[in-house]
Image 1 (cartoon, helix red, strand yellow):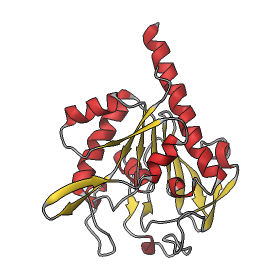
Image 2: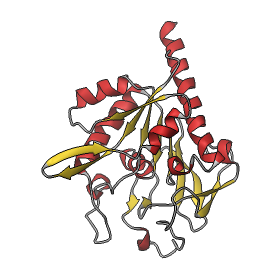
Image 3: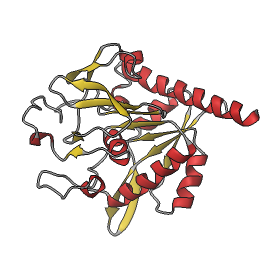
Image 4: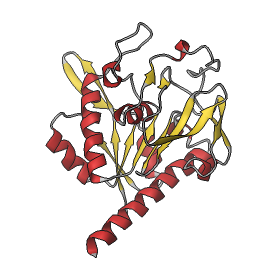
Length: 247
């Protein structure tokens, strides 16, 4: 096994003067590098075989934030409250998750990433938090994204509990969230107005958070530990796979 893990990081796309460009916030890369590992940005392509080969080069995957997921992926029409889409990214990440699931690689979903995980595995989303009158906190915060804006309560025994304990003060920069949780996932954290802030798969190495730890990792010890803890999980998984192949 390599001394440094390779963590694939997804990005978004923009159309500039007829040319599609891929990119992502560099804070994701800095957060991965801070754990002593190597981030690589995964280009948005559509060929399933090429995507599967990219996955084979990675020890783990981070699904990052971005624009909304097209509602057709969870069986809904587009409501007026929905935002912009990146259909090329939707298709790419769907194929990507199929390959990651088949190759059994660990995944951390962040913001849009937790939503994509939930949709891929059979859950649904609120197309806008305003559709639920109980969601009263500001989930699209103003000011610096490097600091928290609301508390989340965390379930004991979860991935997040091992990092933060029973609660954490996190940032919030989203207008959509999980509605129906996908089968075989459990909710690990919620805001105090009920928005789902963390999930994890019951049997697969898959975790998701609704907040943005990459934006807080320089200012918040817990968010630094989150990337470190994910790194440990990826290394343990890679070691287990290597040992199994050698036997």
